[in-house]
Structures are given as C-alpha cells and as structure tokens.
Length: 280
Image (cartoon, rainbow, N blue to C red; front, side, top):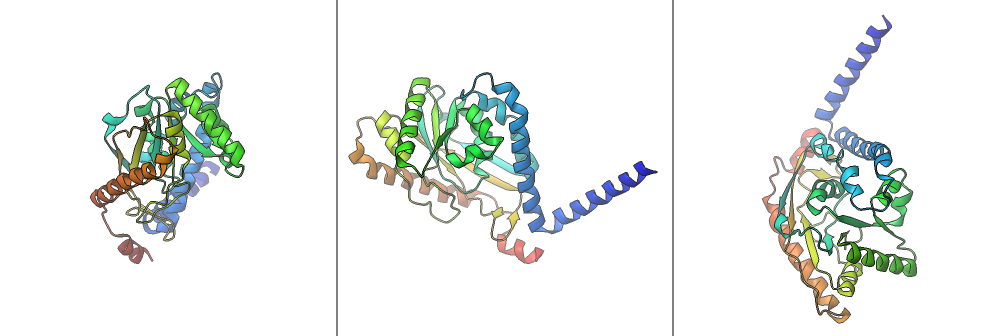
C-alpha cells in the first residue's frame, strides 16, 4: 500500500515536472542550471579518488571531465568545432577565448580531449567552491588572486613556467568577465603578457553567440547549437611589450570577425522575442 502511494507521488511529480519543463521557460532555465551545477559538484566528488594520486597533473582533467560530457546531451547543447587542425598536441600555447556564460565550461569539457594537455586560469574565489575547487586544483587549474596584483603576477609567472616546461596549453578568458553583447569586451593584458614573455603562440578560440538559445534576463535556456572556431596560431616570436597593444587589437579584431560570421550561421529555430511572447 505504502509503495503504491510512493509510486503515485513519483508519477505525479514526473508529470508536473514534464509539464512545467515544456510550458515554462523560467522553470526550464532553473532546472537546467540546477542539473548542470549539481552534476559538476557530484562529479567533482566522485573523481577525487581517481586523480588525487597525481595532484596538479593536467591529464587528470581528461578523467574529471569525461562524465560531464553527458551534460551536453541532457541540456540539449550541440557543439560544432571548426579548425581543429590548428590544435597541436604537446606544443605550449596561450589559448584565448571569448567569455559569455558558465556554459563556456561545457564547451571546454567537449574540447578537452582535442588538446590533451591543457589547463586554465581561474579566479581564486572558485577554489573555495568546494568540492569543485579542490578537483580543479588537482587537475592543474591555476588560481589567480586578482585583488592582489603582486600575487597575481607571481601566479601568472609560475603558470608560464609550468606551461613551457610541460608543453601545456593555458586557457585564458581575456575579457576578464562574461559578456553576451554584440561586441566582445576590451581585452586585458594578462594573456598577451604571458605569450610575449614566454615567446609562445596565441591560439584564439571563438564561441558563436548563445543568444539564440540562452537569455538570462528573459529566463530562457533552450536547446542550442554552438560553433566553436579554432583560429590559426599567432606567433609572438620577436615581439616585445611595446608590441602588446597592436597584438591585442589584432587578435580581438580576428576573433570579432569570426564571432559575427559564426553567430550568423548558427541555426535559431525561433527568435527569442517570439519564444518569450509564446510562454508569457
């Protein structure tokens, strides 16, 4: 009798959830992000026993992110990668990518096996988001204290030495914060300083716009198709800090051109304005 009541409650809960997911864009967004963050945290805990034996090794990332690739299917995200031939394994480089949302991380998860050995720069505050922070540290993530310029500089220099000595790629979001506008935010100098200081190539990565399926103010998170473009590496050999402003402008201009082109190519089943009107 009790089992039957539990079954009825479960069936009712599934039916209500399915109804709300289908007809409430607000509920769909909150449910998807809850699923996203919950799975990231659970995976962080479960993978620790398998990666704790080689702390700080970037190869741990392949183990830690493997289960998370299923999230793309669950959230309805389709990643299409162009220019994969520009990714050279076992060659150090500074990877710069535009930053739109925490969803960027799922694109990184999808692409991680293509790089094999890659780590990322993250703000120090993320380290304290346990257990994710501990797992990220075990995977070689380089945490930067942006509030302390001296410590930040020392951490960046240490990251550069690690990248060069171990032939690792370092992923940086040069905008410094998220932006889903028509234009990328102005780039900060950190990634370009590292590239010139280490005489390492810059590998630009461009995500097409998410605005066809993700809109935080309107509480919309629909299935989406994203084009990720790996541009040819840009050499910094012979460049000095005096060349940095021109280098930053050139890289940003190239990325903006690709951003506009690929964003126009992405298929949007229904304009967001129509989606909002339909569900309100």
